[in-house]
Length: 68
Image 1 (cartoon, rainbow, N blue to C red):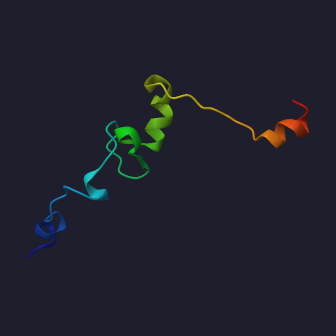
Image 2 (image 1 turned 180 degrees about the vertical axis):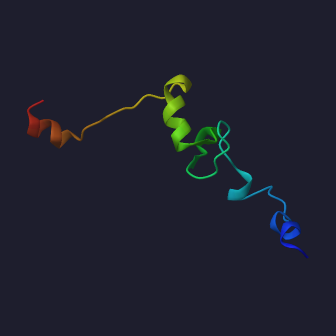
């Protein structure tokens, strides 16, 4: 058996090897929540278009300390 015949011999129907970003086909840093299947870089680029917005919340004790 040569290296070429063994390298991609097993099916990739489950596990990390079966999933990739739907935009750039990158497989690392994948965001699978809500069936997004985007890598983190593509998510940062497309988040506004998808409808995600960044929410910054401060704990209550920080608001008191700063006088808000």
